[in-house]
Length: 105
Image (cartoon, rainbow, N blue to C red; front, side, top):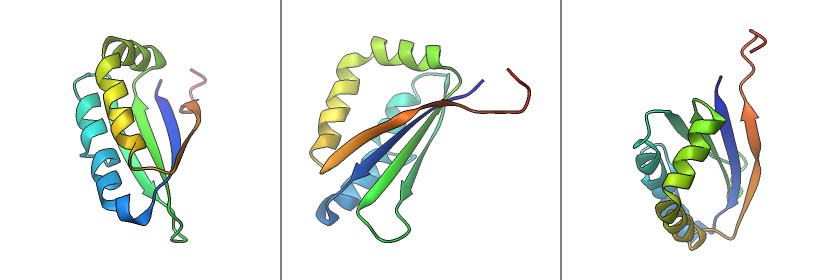
């Protein structure tokens, strides 16, 4: 089963490049997550209409793996979060989801 976390951010134009570097699939967050073998990938989406809005999609093998990793690395998680807050006007957690794969699992 896959576990997916989705966030929405509003980013000032002046901070967009730094935000994309930190939150993109090769950025600081993804590099941090890659330390865990249960991390799958991160996607960064920019609003098609040109609005200063982004979404991140973080994929993990399971909820348990994500929560264990986050708890074990809480200080670094908080430091990255604070770094990101300086680049955003707002952030909103849209939810955590399980991927529906059709197997009923």
